[in-house]
Length: 469
Image (cartoon, rainbow, N blue to C red; front, side, top):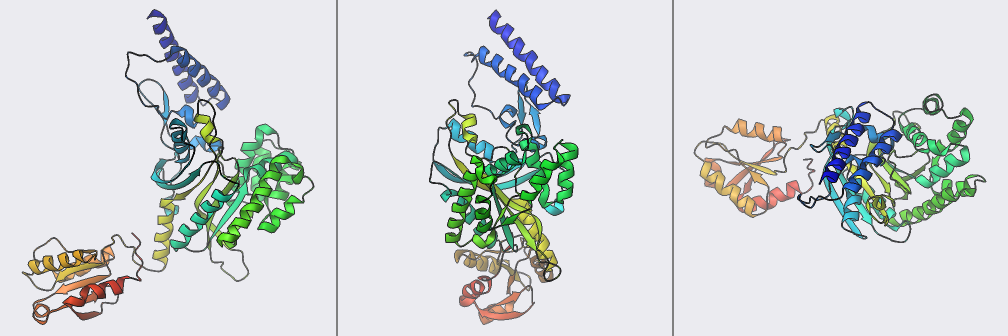
């Protein structure tokens, strides 16, 4: 017992040392070294059989080293035992960890959940500290590029069906990037940090990126220039074939593998009919360190101001790639499970849809309700309840104001505010004539519809309407 108590004290002291280094913003290498010591001490301590066994947590030790320079955006937390924890940064690392813990080697799934970034919010651009992501992933050992092509097909289908405007999916491969850095003369220790700089080319000019690489990150100017000759190129399969003939790049094993896979990928994308939406872009780097192969990012394009101008990107809305080594990081025996996936930025999509509707002066729908059952006079609550029940039974999304005698004007205003397209109005005269007055909220046109024909008329009018809710 005394020996265990001494070890527990050493674990506590080492935990305090790790926390102190983090508070002092010590180097990542120093922190990792002390974390390694902490883990070794905990391993010596072993399990305490007298205590309840808990399901494995998701500690910051897990997240460190997976996100590259983006790690500074992770929300760090501490539990009462002194262990370092953090809020979920994305859905990919937890998915890989789930596969390792449950020894799964083959699965296809989608997942919608909240993630957290310690970032500067920009609400007009759909950028928040707490937001939803929608992920789709394929895990398993398959022939090259077939799952990757399916992920890109799914991404294009989603963005097309949302009708949020023209988009372009940029594609690259981490192996091509690493091979390019190697032949250009980038030191191995600077691969990831230079990769992060290159990834900014969609936001800033090459001169600014070069200044960052040379001035802030210590890269030789001539090396930066060689990188610039590559990363400013983009195109289709013809660019892939051109680089396969590049006398330097084609001699690098990693780059050659990446280029051959990209050529195969473009063949599949052509068969899927989406090759016109894909651009091979050597500036795409994706900052996350867990990517191992193909990477991609979808950006929306705005209409050029004048004929002949290049379309300008208005922001990334989806991204993903291949991460074959991530599951093995969590498996005690290092067993790898190849994975590829994509992530859709939900709030980013919503922000774009709202801006588009505002520009078109269209009302944002806040409900899926197709019709409001209203009354023109007092003491018609029973008739409203009967009619709304008939509509519900027929599969119509209907509602009514929860008042006995609401004013007709208030009911119509509610429809305008909520974006409900139709109003079914009951009045004393309509009851006598066996009809319902159907009103279009947008045009304010009214037509009498026989009660038995009301359901079909509502379905006909709403079948082609778009609901943004």
